[in-house]
Length: 499
Image (cartoon, rainbow, N blue to C red; front, top):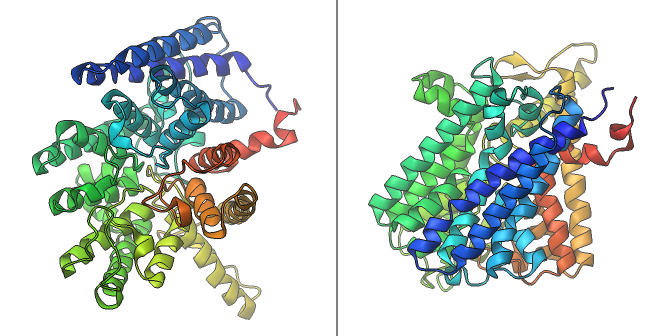
């Protein structure tokens, strides 16, 4: 086994920090425009981050350019930690979030596109910090590491290992044989959708500042809002909520399919098996929950985060159901209504969506729909094999046989995912959370969802958690965002053996 190339790892972390610092500087004009003194702290944080990154890159710039798989795992994990650590600086330097624990939680929640927050009064935060908060979502959504892969050829470094470790989902169709071209096209699509949503939200009635922040949070499936009541603030403007719903749906779908759709290959999109389950699954669950709200909802029960009145029409029930189902399934975490205040059956359905996730190749978190499809098909085949033990029947996905090692990998992932969820729930209860809050915080953090149940419901924050619980949830966000194996393999002793 190849030795770890620590110099190239350090060099890459340096380049990542440099890019992160420049993103921080983008928040400075917003702060200046709104006449905030916070621009000084944000500017200092950006320059300091760039200086750290430049030092790490400069002293290791002559490192050998051979990059191996183990280097890729280390760079992805440490890269995310580096982003989160330096990303706390704007909060700390401005005093917006003076506690390092809280600043780290908010930052890694942003980069992991979880959307859980410790802020109790979001609207009181300086606009520059709110933009930076949303920017952490946008950076983390597709992955700043994939962005860096797109420019690595300029530095003479190959990036296939990094993309394979960073690309969301168990697999991805290759749009182009060259990985750098793939990364560039992914980011071009990502940027284009963000700009499109920004313009539509602005036309629909949002301020330009709120529009750009919500667009970044939507396309990253992150969920940070500039309003205390999240998207429920716009309950009187249905068009805004429908626009966000559409773009949440797009962000939760495989970005490769978006590329094919843009190229006019619509047939390839509608024939994709995962997309069919994704599209019709959202419609089915939305229909069920809409019916539960219309016919079985207690008329005296508070249903809206922003307005205490119950749903007044079938359209309103459908809109909130569609919005919340799409938000949770894509792990975006925006809130238009407090689904924990719906009837218990509807709430349980919403909680079950925590364990499904969006599509592979999207910016969403969770288990991913394709894994569930393969597991269900494999389980059905096991029944067939009981009747025909000598038959060789492969699991088929999109009309093609799935290799057994991929099936085993998916089964291992799901078992490990559920085991971590159970153990995490137990540990969080030990750290002071009640039963519902513990399982809610564990499922939300591991699935990168945001709002949960119990004391971390859509109308609550994570501020009341102990520091220990916040650090543990931060760890869950990290491993959830990087699909478990990428981080956990670093904790195994054989990973570090030289031979």
